[in-house]
Length: 517
View 1 (cartoon, rainbow, N blue to C red):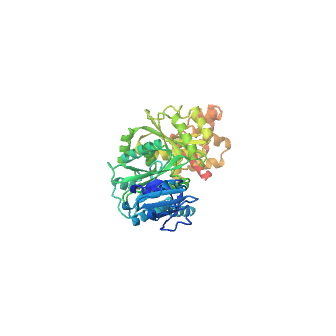
View 2: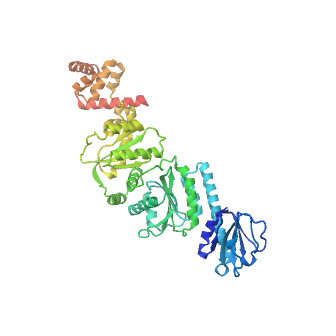
View 3: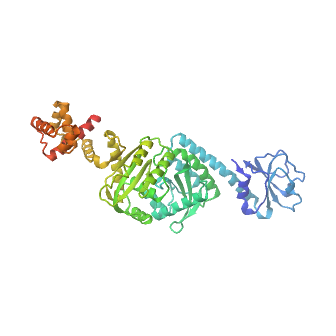
């Protein structure tokens, strides 16, 4: 337990003390003394009356004194060397209250030590973020919300009493804040960071939309905002001790969130927040989306598709993510770029109802970037309503997942190229193999020559286009027709029927899945 001489002076500032300081040192205890001025130490604060203070007092080390002026000052205390002195007039203080104040200012350190030890113990036992927030609540006694950098709620503790603040009540229910509140929060975060390099807690108020003030504390890793602690002043007023406690605890929380995928670097803007909400929520509230789009001047309806950029190396750092984000944003400067977990997404807005010219997406610069950073990219189908962003995101993940079985050496994969693959996968996961695999096709694979197998595969992959298949196989058009007629005669395959060709294509995909698993 300790507090600096400066901290004690500040705590007693309302009593207008006269302060003389030789050195700002830590003080771990205090004593009231009357006449025993021998054997004093430098880590305690000694309280005495001026009437009892020895005129010949001359210590050879730093001594901390709180002198209550009860008589006319006959001692020239300014001549004392090696002394930190606080002087208070007796008629302005109560000795009992003074001792209470000193206990409070020194005891806050005890609270910090106790809560820190409890958090360290919880972390050592792999305690969850919820457990850590519960420990902090026990010391602060006010409702706490912990969010990621996109302000999406990850943990909270509101105690047993009702919050009585509709903004926070809805925040906890929906995991996403009111758009007007979010707009104010991001303004304050940017403003506070612009005037201070320290990520210290700050008290802010939005009393036009809320009933209580908020204590905001960013949690940084490698100087990047990764999370935020918000404390609501609903149960008891904030004091300096709360700020000190939160300022200490934030440093202990940082290691606990490093490996949690919910806490990832984002650019600290509402764009990141709304898309994190869209991708994380299974039940998007229309009000949140529409109001945020209104604030951001973002179209709810347009021709969109989603580009999802993933690191192949899953151990990517937040600094790597930030560097890549800056590069992607400069490349897609007229599109909406945001971060979700450890992925960089681009909401591409186009005037066409089909993919635009792919020169920008598959430009030499972007392909080089993918190679340099070891990236794999999934691209969704076109969609027309932001409510469908999550479905588009899932398409990008499937494109990336199915790309593992692709022969393509390019890092960019379109979901549209894997639609049939996804259909087959859905059949197989429901164990409907017999409904999708043609039995004649199985017989063909088991008995036909490798030459004929490759012939049929090229024909199917080119969707029944004989000329393209012949060019791919480097054989004459008539040679391919002869082989196809032979396959039809031996195995009863109607290769002039487009529906049958599609079924064979599905069979090929299904058997590839089965052989790979």
